[in-house]
Image (cartoon, rainbow, N blue to C red; front, side):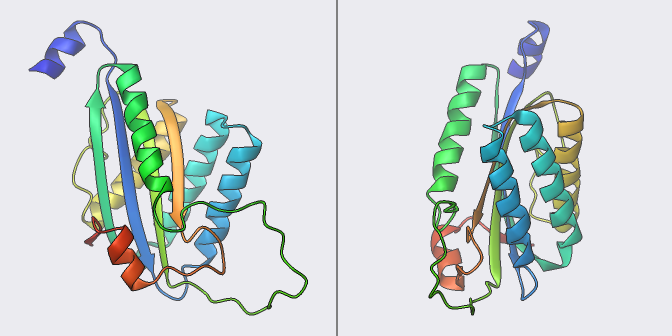
Length: 197
């Protein structure tokens, strides 16, 4: 009822949502390369929404190619009729995602000459995608605890970019760099909301 009233009044509908996807297996480490490249490009562009959107498209396409490694997922979101409130929720989700275990890459660290050439390869990667958009996208505004729904949601994110409906894009991931490891115990501790697919 409230949605209908706000639409009649010509208000803009803002949706903020976060998708968490856990990939597991010995072949998931290359995804960290795509994630780190996207993070660097985002920083270099000073948060340009078009550059962030292109990075999101590349990430979604990569995740869709790695669907056999999807193990668990979670999603959450809210609908707002006020841009400021939507922005506050984006910031809240950003802060929460950034505080998750090893979800901030360190681009400032230089490798030491004496560093070992042998690094552990993680078997777990968690990707957290937070977006804000205008309009209605049923594929994102539903329970994404099954593989088909999650595939449709990732495709919907791609379409949102090309339809210029995205208002904010944030991507966090753990571990944040090659060589770090995310254990099963850490998954349970820092990502308790993940539901097996």
